[in-house]
Length: 127
Image (cartoon, rainbow, N blue to C red; front, side, top):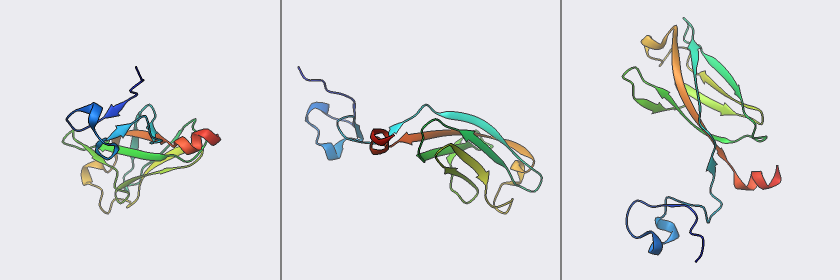
């Protein structure tokens, strides 16, 4: 019996689905998700906020980031209001617009975030 690995599909027979129909398969060199990072950052009275968090990856990973809305829903970072940048040592979350598009309720407030860094299989082989 072969090892099936991990496959994620929308629905149907997992044994007979083509690779194009799979959302994820460990058979392919797809990016892998790290443990999620969670935290908060302070936005000051002018609408500026920044937080730098170290990571152990050793290269600049792709990041998926969300912030908690006032109504308790999570919204993806749009790099207009709140954005994320990554480098070899850390990731940086900041407000970009200095309060232009930032909701007034977030001025001089604490914003909760969660971040997933994606491991690049090609980079992992080199590092």
